[in-house]
Length: 403
Image (cartoon, rainbow, N blue to C red):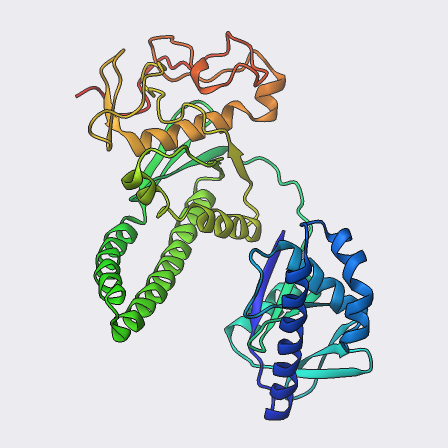
């Protein structure tokens, strides 16, 4: 597991000047390499430009190689700023005095600069992680003179918890379902409904400001940038709250967490694409992985195959959503349920099906409905499960009864 923390500096004016000059020289070298780059292969760029960079710049070998790695990953032919990484202990070291904590950077072969770090919540978080076993072997210097600490910690295999919490990520909320190994639904809930409501208002305001900006209004352009920043901060804070609530629920119910492995979707029209791109799936997944690692909760990623088409009552696989996207109606048994909660239930079921003990023991299967209908639609033909594996229940359906 890896994590990055931004550490703010409190350098003097003289040190700030040195940091600024270093960043300008690094950016200049990066732009010169971008102009002569012919491919995105690092070794080709290194062989073609390293000797020239070494002669024309005061940087050491490690810094030149790091800038080359940045250039290979970049798009376009120019950059405004570039971040440079320093490895411990060769080009960077840390020490602490009674007053401050310092990070010493070897910016040039014979010149080191000790940068003091500001004491705030980020630095407290950094020290807390270091105390809990995290290691920091690389520090980065951003273009605006701040320090980024890149921390890492080895992942250990955790024992499986009793239950599973499935998460379905959709446009307007995060639906969750907690499921026991015997097929009993322990809890269903939805989180983050206010994110869509607030963002919808921000989208409308951004569209109005964008139209004014296109007409040449400088003030509207400033307001547009402020709205984008406000939206980013709001979504980040709310995602943190949602992840906190979900992980707390998982601990309360002694459950592992399962999430879909969503990939690129096929374009289905401008309006649909615009809505789907607003779903903060990647940010949510990154934050969830970090919090699950901190709280020692196993996060499993399952295949999204047919999770939105499967009926939780009879096990049939339909064509997906009806005209009313929020409801799912099964044409086989007629049950009408909330599509988001049903999809989160399908994610939890699939996570249970792919557990190691169920893969090795073919006699184990779940019981969900009295109709005795096999739920083979949740599994692909090449998943390695036998065709007689089924999901049944001798008593009650997992969702509410038919309307």
